[in-house]
View 1 (cartoon, helix red, strand yellow):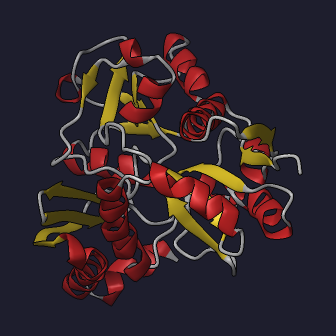
View 2 (cartoon, helix red, strand yellow; view 1 turned 120 degrees about the vertical axis):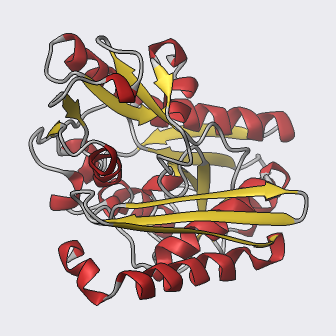
Length: 309
Protein backbone atom coordinates (compact mmCIF):
# COMPACT_ATOMS: atom_id res chain seq x y z
CA UNK A 1 0.00 0.00 0.00
CA UNK A 2 1.32 3.46 -0.90
CA UNK A 3 2.44 5.66 1.99
CA UNK A 4 -0.27 8.14 2.95
CA UNK A 5 0.57 11.77 2.16
CA UNK A 6 0.66 13.98 5.26
CA UNK A 7 -1.14 17.28 4.69
CA UNK A 8 -0.01 20.31 6.70
CA UNK A 9 -2.50 23.16 6.97
CA UNK A 10 -1.34 26.74 7.42
CA UNK A 11 -2.31 30.34 6.89
CA UNK A 12 -0.91 31.97 3.77
CA UNK A 13 1.19 34.75 5.30
CA UNK A 14 4.91 34.70 4.66
CA UNK A 15 5.69 33.95 8.30
CA UNK A 16 3.06 31.19 8.48
CA UNK A 17 4.53 29.56 5.38
CA UNK A 18 8.07 29.76 6.78
CA UNK A 19 6.86 28.05 9.95
CA UNK A 20 5.02 25.37 7.99
CA UNK A 21 8.11 24.68 5.87
CA UNK A 22 10.18 24.45 9.06
CA UNK A 23 7.83 21.83 10.51
CA UNK A 24 7.80 19.96 7.19
CA UNK A 25 11.61 19.80 7.26
CA UNK A 26 11.62 18.53 10.85
CA UNK A 27 9.12 15.82 9.96
CA UNK A 28 11.03 14.90 6.81
CA UNK A 29 14.33 14.66 8.69
CA UNK A 30 12.75 12.38 11.28
CA UNK A 31 10.73 10.29 8.81
CA UNK A 32 12.66 10.41 5.53
CA UNK A 33 10.24 8.31 3.49
CA UNK A 34 7.24 10.40 4.41
CA UNK A 35 5.28 12.23 1.70
CA UNK A 36 4.33 15.70 2.93
CA UNK A 37 2.32 18.49 1.32
CA UNK A 38 1.52 21.98 2.59
CA UNK A 39 -2.00 23.30 2.07
CA UNK A 40 -2.64 27.02 2.41
CA UNK A 41 -5.98 27.79 4.08
CA UNK A 42 -7.55 31.23 3.76
CA UNK A 43 -8.76 32.47 7.16
CA UNK A 44 -11.10 35.29 8.08
CA UNK A 45 -8.26 37.04 9.89
CA UNK A 46 -6.12 37.08 6.75
CA UNK A 47 -9.01 38.28 4.60
CA UNK A 48 -9.84 41.13 6.95
CA UNK A 49 -7.31 43.88 6.41
CA UNK A 50 -9.20 46.83 7.89
CA UNK A 51 -6.29 49.05 8.83
CA UNK A 52 -8.13 51.15 11.43
CA UNK A 53 -9.81 48.32 13.36
CA UNK A 54 -8.09 46.21 15.99
CA UNK A 55 -8.24 42.43 15.74
CA UNK A 56 -10.12 42.43 19.05
CA UNK A 57 -12.97 44.36 17.42
CA UNK A 58 -13.53 41.91 14.56
CA UNK A 59 -13.47 38.55 16.28
CA UNK A 60 -10.20 37.92 18.13
CA UNK A 61 -7.84 34.97 17.93
CA UNK A 62 -10.32 32.54 16.36
CA UNK A 63 -10.24 34.55 13.13
CA UNK A 64 -6.94 32.89 12.29
CA UNK A 65 -7.91 29.32 13.19
CA UNK A 66 -11.57 28.59 12.37
CA UNK A 67 -11.22 27.46 8.75
CA UNK A 68 -8.05 25.49 9.50
CA UNK A 69 -9.70 23.70 12.42
CA UNK A 70 -12.69 22.81 10.25
CA UNK A 71 -10.31 21.00 7.90
CA UNK A 72 -8.66 19.20 10.83
CA UNK A 73 -12.06 18.12 12.10
CA UNK A 74 -13.22 16.72 8.76
CA UNK A 75 -9.88 15.08 7.98
CA UNK A 76 -8.99 17.29 5.00
CA UNK A 77 -5.61 18.01 6.63
CA UNK A 78 -3.60 15.98 9.16
CA UNK A 79 -1.94 18.73 11.17
CA UNK A 80 -1.93 22.51 11.42
CA UNK A 81 1.01 24.78 12.18
CA UNK A 82 0.20 27.82 14.30
CA UNK A 83 1.95 30.61 16.16
CA UNK A 84 1.17 29.58 19.73
CA UNK A 85 0.26 33.12 20.79
CA UNK A 86 -2.58 33.11 18.23
CA UNK A 87 -4.29 30.06 19.74
CA UNK A 88 -7.43 30.37 21.90
CA UNK A 89 -7.33 28.36 25.13
CA UNK A 90 -10.57 26.54 24.21
CA UNK A 91 -10.25 24.31 21.14
CA UNK A 92 -12.94 22.47 19.14
CA UNK A 93 -13.92 19.03 20.42
CA UNK A 94 -11.43 16.37 19.42
CA UNK A 95 -8.61 18.78 18.56
CA UNK A 96 -5.54 19.44 20.70
CA UNK A 97 -2.14 21.10 20.64
CA UNK A 98 0.06 18.02 20.43
CA UNK A 99 3.58 19.21 19.62
CA UNK A 100 5.86 22.15 20.38
CA UNK A 101 9.24 22.46 18.63
CA UNK A 102 11.97 24.47 20.44
CA UNK A 103 10.95 28.04 21.18
CA UNK A 104 12.53 31.08 19.51
CA UNK A 105 13.34 34.43 21.17
CA UNK A 106 10.33 35.48 23.29
CA UNK A 107 11.12 39.22 23.42
CA UNK A 108 9.53 42.14 21.60
CA UNK A 109 11.69 44.10 19.16
CA UNK A 110 11.73 47.90 19.05
CA UNK A 111 11.93 49.11 15.45
CA UNK A 112 12.50 52.72 14.48
CA UNK A 113 14.26 54.81 11.88
CA UNK A 114 14.54 57.72 14.30
CA UNK A 115 15.89 56.55 17.66
CA UNK A 116 17.74 53.49 18.94
CA UNK A 117 15.73 52.68 22.07
CA UNK A 118 12.16 52.93 23.32
CA UNK A 119 13.34 55.21 26.13
CA UNK A 120 14.75 57.69 23.59
CA UNK A 121 11.42 58.42 21.88
CA UNK A 122 10.52 62.10 21.81
CA UNK A 123 7.65 63.45 23.90
CA UNK A 124 4.38 62.62 22.14
CA UNK A 125 6.02 60.30 19.61
CA UNK A 126 3.71 58.15 17.47
CA UNK A 127 3.79 54.40 18.01
CA UNK A 128 2.16 52.00 15.57
CA UNK A 129 0.62 48.86 17.09
CA UNK A 130 -2.58 46.84 16.96
CA UNK A 131 -1.67 44.78 20.05
CA UNK A 132 -3.54 45.74 23.22
CA UNK A 133 -0.74 44.23 25.31
CA UNK A 134 1.99 46.23 23.60
CA UNK A 135 -0.03 49.43 23.66
CA UNK A 136 -0.83 49.03 27.37
CA UNK A 137 2.79 48.24 28.26
CA UNK A 138 4.06 51.23 26.30
CA UNK A 139 1.49 53.57 27.85
CA UNK A 140 2.38 52.21 31.30
CA UNK A 141 5.90 53.55 30.83
CA UNK A 142 5.14 56.46 28.52
CA UNK A 143 1.59 57.85 28.84
CA UNK A 144 2.59 60.73 26.55
CA UNK A 145 2.87 58.49 23.49
CA UNK A 146 0.32 58.63 20.69
CA UNK A 147 -0.87 55.26 19.36
CA UNK A 148 -2.04 54.55 15.82
CA UNK A 149 -3.67 51.30 14.66
CA UNK A 150 -1.12 49.25 12.76
CA UNK A 151 -2.18 46.03 11.08
CA UNK A 152 -0.71 44.00 8.24
CA UNK A 153 2.18 41.59 7.78
CA UNK A 154 5.71 42.27 8.99
CA UNK A 155 6.87 43.81 5.71
CA UNK A 156 3.85 46.11 5.59
CA UNK A 157 4.44 47.34 9.13
CA UNK A 158 8.11 48.10 8.49
CA UNK A 159 7.23 49.88 5.24
CA UNK A 160 4.79 52.11 7.16
CA UNK A 161 7.71 53.38 9.25
CA UNK A 162 9.51 54.44 6.07
CA UNK A 163 6.35 56.24 4.99
CA UNK A 164 6.22 58.17 8.27
CA UNK A 165 2.95 56.66 9.49
CA UNK A 166 4.61 56.16 12.89
CA UNK A 167 7.91 56.93 14.59
CA UNK A 168 8.37 53.35 15.80
CA UNK A 169 6.67 50.00 16.26
CA UNK A 170 7.07 46.78 18.23
CA UNK A 171 7.21 43.33 16.63
CA UNK A 172 8.11 39.87 17.91
CA UNK A 173 11.81 39.08 17.63
CA UNK A 174 10.89 35.47 16.83
CA UNK A 175 8.97 36.34 13.70
CA UNK A 176 11.70 38.63 12.42
CA UNK A 177 14.33 35.97 13.07
CA UNK A 178 12.33 33.29 11.28
CA UNK A 179 11.84 35.57 8.30
CA UNK A 180 15.56 36.34 8.09
CA UNK A 181 14.81 39.97 8.98
CA UNK A 182 16.65 40.25 12.29
CA UNK A 183 18.61 43.19 10.87
CA UNK A 184 15.37 45.20 11.08
CA UNK A 185 15.53 45.05 14.89
CA UNK A 186 16.71 48.40 16.27
CA UNK A 187 16.90 47.09 19.83
CA UNK A 188 15.41 44.33 21.98
CA UNK A 189 13.03 45.24 24.78
CA UNK A 190 13.50 43.94 28.31
CA UNK A 191 11.42 40.81 28.92
CA UNK A 192 10.93 41.90 32.54
CA UNK A 193 9.58 45.34 31.58
CA UNK A 194 7.74 44.18 28.47
CA UNK A 195 6.51 40.64 29.22
CA UNK A 196 5.60 38.81 26.00
CA UNK A 197 2.20 37.51 25.03
CA UNK A 198 1.54 33.99 26.37
CA UNK A 199 3.11 31.63 23.85
CA UNK A 200 5.09 34.30 21.99
CA UNK A 201 8.07 32.87 20.12
CA UNK A 202 6.64 29.35 20.04
CA UNK A 203 5.16 27.31 17.21
CA UNK A 204 2.56 24.69 18.04
CA UNK A 205 1.02 21.83 16.10
CA UNK A 206 -2.71 21.13 16.29
CA UNK A 207 -4.09 17.75 15.32
CA UNK A 208 -7.13 15.54 15.79
CA UNK A 209 -6.75 13.19 18.74
CA UNK A 210 -8.18 10.32 16.69
CA UNK A 211 -5.40 10.71 14.11
CA UNK A 212 -3.09 8.40 16.03
CA UNK A 213 -0.72 7.98 13.06
CA UNK A 214 -0.06 11.74 13.04
CA UNK A 215 0.38 11.84 16.81
CA UNK A 216 3.04 9.12 16.64
CA UNK A 217 4.90 10.91 13.84
CA UNK A 218 5.00 14.13 15.88
CA UNK A 219 6.13 12.62 19.19
CA UNK A 220 9.89 12.79 18.47
CA UNK A 221 9.61 16.46 17.51
CA UNK A 222 8.14 17.69 20.77
CA UNK A 223 10.39 19.88 22.94
CA UNK A 224 9.38 19.22 26.54
CA UNK A 225 10.79 22.46 27.93
CA UNK A 226 8.81 24.55 25.46
CA UNK A 227 5.67 22.48 26.07
CA UNK A 228 5.99 22.91 29.84
CA UNK A 229 6.49 26.67 29.59
CA UNK A 230 3.47 26.98 27.29
CA UNK A 231 1.30 24.90 29.63
CA UNK A 232 2.02 27.42 32.40
CA UNK A 233 1.47 30.49 30.23
CA UNK A 234 -1.70 29.19 28.56
CA UNK A 235 -3.16 28.08 31.91
CA UNK A 236 -2.68 31.63 33.17
CA UNK A 237 -4.49 32.88 30.06
CA UNK A 238 -7.24 30.29 30.55
CA UNK A 239 -7.91 31.32 34.15
CA UNK A 240 -8.24 34.94 33.04
CA UNK A 241 -10.48 33.96 30.12
CA UNK A 242 -7.95 35.80 28.00
CA UNK A 243 -8.49 36.85 24.39
CA UNK A 244 -7.32 39.56 22.03
CA UNK A 245 -9.41 41.94 24.16
CA UNK A 246 -7.22 41.42 27.20
CA UNK A 247 -3.80 43.04 27.76
CA UNK A 248 -1.96 40.06 29.28
CA UNK A 249 1.72 39.17 29.42
CA UNK A 250 3.30 35.95 30.62
CA UNK A 251 6.72 34.36 30.54
CA UNK A 252 7.66 30.99 32.01
CA UNK A 253 11.34 30.09 32.48
CA UNK A 254 12.73 26.65 33.23
CA UNK A 255 16.01 25.83 34.92
CA UNK A 256 16.44 22.12 35.52
CA UNK A 257 13.35 21.00 37.42
CA UNK A 258 12.43 24.54 38.51
CA UNK A 259 9.81 26.65 36.76
CA UNK A 260 9.22 30.35 37.33
CA UNK A 261 6.28 32.29 35.92
CA UNK A 262 5.98 36.05 35.46
CA UNK A 263 2.43 37.22 34.83
CA UNK A 264 0.93 40.67 34.26
CA UNK A 265 -2.51 42.10 33.52
CA UNK A 266 -3.09 45.71 32.52
CA UNK A 267 -5.82 48.21 31.86
CA UNK A 268 -5.90 48.91 28.12
CA UNK A 269 -4.65 52.46 28.70
CA UNK A 270 -1.78 51.28 30.92
CA UNK A 271 -2.93 53.31 33.91
CA UNK A 272 -3.22 50.26 36.17
CA UNK A 273 -1.39 46.95 36.18
CA UNK A 274 -0.92 43.95 38.44
CA UNK A 275 1.93 41.50 38.16
CA UNK A 276 3.71 38.85 40.17
CA UNK A 277 6.19 35.99 39.93
CA UNK A 278 5.58 32.46 41.15
CA UNK A 279 7.96 29.53 41.38
CA UNK A 280 7.39 25.79 41.37
CA UNK A 281 8.54 22.65 39.61
CA UNK A 282 7.98 21.64 36.00
CA UNK A 283 5.32 19.22 37.21
CA UNK A 284 3.38 22.18 38.60
CA UNK A 285 3.16 24.02 35.27
CA UNK A 286 -0.61 23.99 34.84
CA UNK A 287 -1.42 24.70 38.48
CA UNK A 288 1.18 27.49 38.59
CA UNK A 289 -0.51 29.23 35.67
CA UNK A 290 -3.98 28.85 37.17
CA UNK A 291 -2.72 30.09 40.53
CA UNK A 292 -1.18 33.17 38.90
CA UNK A 293 -4.50 33.91 37.20
CA UNK A 294 -6.45 33.58 40.44
CA UNK A 295 -3.90 35.71 42.31
CA UNK A 296 -3.97 38.61 39.88
CA UNK A 297 -7.77 38.49 39.48
CA UNK A 298 -8.15 38.69 43.25
CA UNK A 299 -5.65 41.50 43.56
CA UNK A 300 -7.17 43.56 40.74
CA UNK A 301 -10.81 43.22 41.83
CA UNK A 302 -13.87 42.77 39.65
CA UNK A 303 -13.96 46.40 38.50
CA UNK A 304 -10.60 46.01 36.81
CA UNK A 305 -12.05 43.73 34.15
CA UNK A 306 -15.01 45.83 33.04
CA UNK A 307 -12.95 47.28 30.18
CA UNK A 308 -12.34 43.74 28.90
CA UNK A 309 -15.98 43.00 28.05
